[in-house]
Length: 406
Image 1 (cartoon, rainbow, N blue to C red):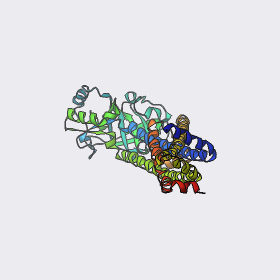
Image 2: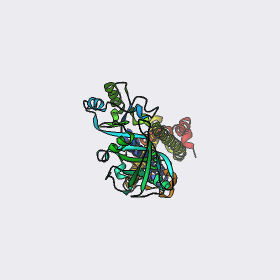
Image 3: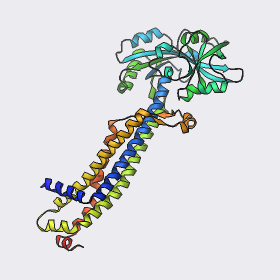
């Protein structure tokens, strides 16, 4: 009997092809646009997270006690060998990177500004941090001790370029003021405002000599499994003790976490609003379909069919249209996402504006199977809710009234 109801539902949809096509097209187009919007927003968040985390900290970062609150060289990370020995016992760690960071003044003949000087091991960071892929001009190397990289926005302010000289003025660990000349060998564009506008990079050994310290201020760690991020952080903290502070990137950049949460909430609200609108339109279509066949349904109930069986016809019609719309919409949505995932969404027309917020000029939306789950659930709920009121009206009609309905 259920198969008969399905056949009747299908035949009615086929009989009203224009209306059926319009409903399916409405669902499919809505899903396609929502999936594209979700992918685009996820692409922005992933790009901002990658550009920030892979240029500053990696997955987990260890600092000396109190360094985060008071960035003084006296609070630097000491006894590095002890920490590295403890980390060597942990299989969850893939690689570690050492950095020395402190305040400085940078000056050209035209301009001077306070910045962060970051000493790093360029060859070791080459494959895991993004700096090697974000060289706008010059080369990713420190050919000599006095080579320096600067952000492109900082270079514009300083009015400088490749092979030009700049002067760094710093206060070392003993409180002495030291000035030294450096030559620009690379200009970087990371889409991270902190790096592009107010940071300079030199070799780690040169930074240690410049600030007169044998240690580092930051030990960054890359782990194998991102899902175990918090667990690995806690394990590291237990291993090395309370003389050091250990943070995940989510703790260091709460704004990224907030943006991710806010974006997901916004997307969910968009889905709810869209499907409420769809459901209102769907109710009208189902109501029209029922009103056209009141006499037909009345005859079916008069010859012995139960109201439940008549309801099944309407339910299957609603479900078929919704599911077809879902299949077409998700197929088109994934197709569109695949195209823009390969080519990118070019935002160059808004480049300068977005760059201020750390958003790249080209976004690559990801493709995630999870994009199907919310639409599928929404389609099922919409199919059920949209038939309740029309069926309630039909239920109030007695078979004889339905037969005489005109």
